[in-house]
Length: 486
Figure (cartoon, helix red, strand yellow):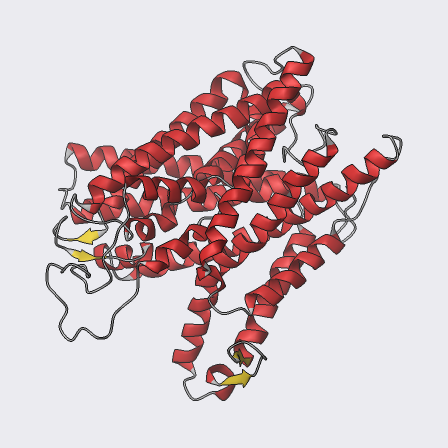
């Protein structure tokens, strides 16, 4: 999952109300769509590009490790299965963009809107909680990933300078704190996630480090002249039988994390022009983008595994399978850090907005929450300082940084996040909304097939979560809080 919301900046550009219209033009006009918003201009290709930039991100780094746990047979098969489920449930979700009639029905602008209009009631609250918990988890995952990449730059330079004699062990905490300080500053910038250039930077960065990882894997295989790994994955002996089972489960979570983008699918669909109907265009875009992503993931996961076999590192660019060319590794890790600094904000913005809106509704008379203090900045518009925003966002970043310092295990956290987000957001809600939207009768063949898919994915989620938690427990046994040295 990459710069999911980083794709949102383009998306917001199409969501501007023009208040000069007194009556919303039904059916739309030359300049406006049927909901009174500016004419949407998105096509299959812009939607595909948005999805690809949203999906390919830091999840790609753990795919070689995931493939190593599963082996040459199960690894690629699991990736193809995940891509099929992602594609199929995305087409179900795309059908829920409009409520009622697929051509003229009421539009839903976000995932939550779709859940609200198709399911309503208590399920909206559950969806909200899962979504916000997921965003909170992503903030922790990104803090860990960026600190590991910052350390990797320092270590590779130190290792290069000492000619490989110094193991260059170092503590990760200063880097996490530095990342936290940067995020505290950025979190105070209003509408940071809507800066038009953020999406472009994020896309360039994620392709940079993904391609370097892939290139280094290919180069390593070419250099050694042999393809490593086995048909069944990491051998028992390197790890115990129990560990092999847990790690295979965790690998499922890692792969699920790499594919998760359902949260922003509706927002991408909201940029598409009609006719043809948005859901038709979106189905084509999903097929193209999931196909391209799966090919890229297969290459990254399989080339990484072919290069390192059982020893494939948890994070391809920082696990020190590669030492040279050290400058290329530095570029890749710098790209990860730049990407994650922006992606952290984009992910946290919906959570920030939700808490701030709730606080304003609950305490409308509190000056601490509602009052903006204007601070003049020479040459710029005055900055609106809101005390509640300042305090709450700073506390949020401090909490995510502290948890990252207590649990700095990239792979386990990524596996857990993938597991938690996969079944509810990628499978359960799209399936339930589709059943409600199309009024599929209970116990009909189609209803039973959709429920079987949902239950099967629930079992995958439970297994992946259990494997990731087992990984965290195992890592904690040999871990001293705040004293981790890599």
